[in-house]
Amino acid sequence: MSSFLFPFILSLIAGLSTGIGSLIALFIKKFEQSYLAFALGLSAGVMIYISFIELLPESFEAIGNLLSLALFFAGMGLIGIIDKFIPEVQNPHHIPSPETNHNNKLLRTGVMTAIIMAVHNFPEGIAVFSSALIDARMGLLVAIAVAIHNIPEGIAVSMPIFYATKSKKKAFFYSFFSGLTEPLGALLAYFFLMPFLTPQLMSGILAFVAGIMIYISLDQLIPIAHKCKEQCKMNQQIVIIGAAIGMLIMALTMMIV
Image 1 (cartoon, one colour):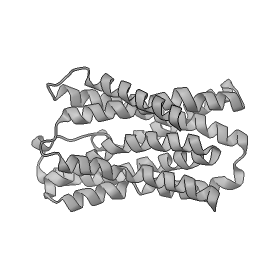
Image 2: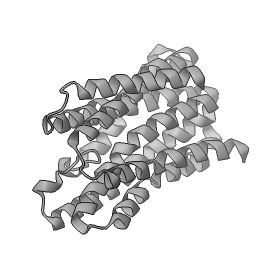
Image 3: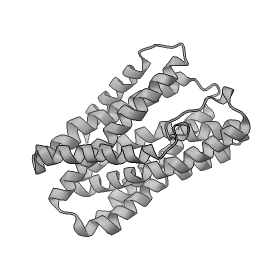
Image 4: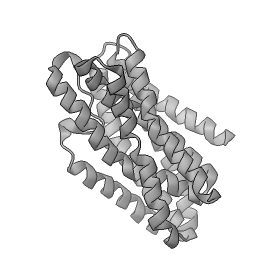
């Protein structure tokens, strides 16, 4: 049970960090797109750094470059297929502008975003749990990266629902709910993957997870961050500043953990 408990707790914390994003959105009196641009850039920096500095090198060492790269691109392919079936306007990282939408459309957008993000987060739960099974330190780093990534997602869910309903409780509930699928993904990994896990398979999972994280960063986080940046008049380098700070946070975290 001890081999299950720590990875599961990490996936639970990572998933429920969407609630942090919800609280940030709800308690900032005047929400600025610049905040979101910075947060998305930071999230991308975290994911890119840990993928190329920690996950892929670990996989290279254990199972070789060729197989690791094949699994890396397979991870990118999987998350790409998932996104292909998600309409662009309801993508988990699409942030609607509250000033330009009617209440009914806002409410529907928020609810659909919560549902779709719940599906989107499922493989992330598997990633955190599997990484922690391989190595506790590795799992902690992946959990931190996913948790930071989930904060902007919580904002994406709570903003439209709050502006549509004026209810902080409803906005927080939907945001909180959308993160629960990550521990569900962990349970799936435990019951279905555990019997087949070998050191080689677990090392391959790291490369696969790296592919997922790089796809999310390059296809979703950075483009949406730049769209948010274009709507504000603050520092035009705010996205790259966020990414650099995210990388610095992970670099310091890896030195400490």
